[in-house]
Length: 220
Ligand code: DX5
Ligand code: ZN
Image 1 (tube, rainbow, N blue to C red):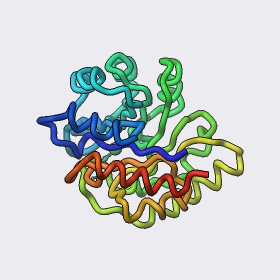
Image 2: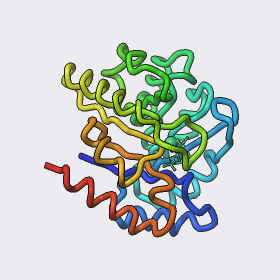
Image 3: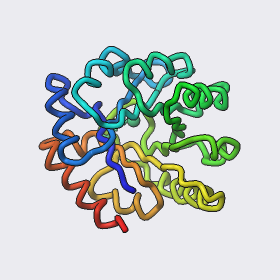
Image 4: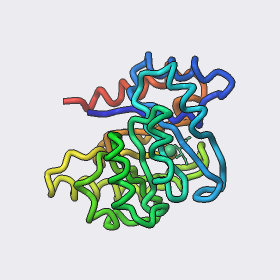
């Protein structure tokens, strides 16, 4: 099953409700929420108060991408704000196994993200514990960056590893995803696609529909 996760970071923040609803009505099942702390990544974005507010106007799966040092500190807060899935960076967790357990014990779905230069093999020990793995295809911190091509091979390698173990874990890809490269990413084995600029630049509903059409070509 292929899922589009529009990244709110690319939206017009003066009309969030309208922008979110446009993507939901056009078929985007997830909403990707980029939380940045100014430490793990250079920039600061938004946190619990904004997520709590927008929870009231969306029934989408709230996919919270924590670009935060030691994100285990915020699992309960994010749950209260309305997160359904919390994705933490391997590079930001001293005790990754513990952080994954905290998320799952809170009753949420757990994801782990890898920066472009982090090899897939760092997740060998926890592959069967997570619901989703996020392969970053840009260096995290900002929207609108250029896709890094070598990350496609990481997606292929990860899908091979999951298949070998018979795991149906989602592979998400985030950064520079467009209508032009999504086919390559689907063919490499990804099934959850984050897109910020490619959804919210211009007509968010029309852009979402165009992504949905492409994904439909690959549905069995
Ligand atoms: C980058 C964020 C992304 C970002 C994607 O650090 O994790 O989710 O919003 O934006 P685009 O699709 O414009 O690269
Ligand atoms: Zn993200």
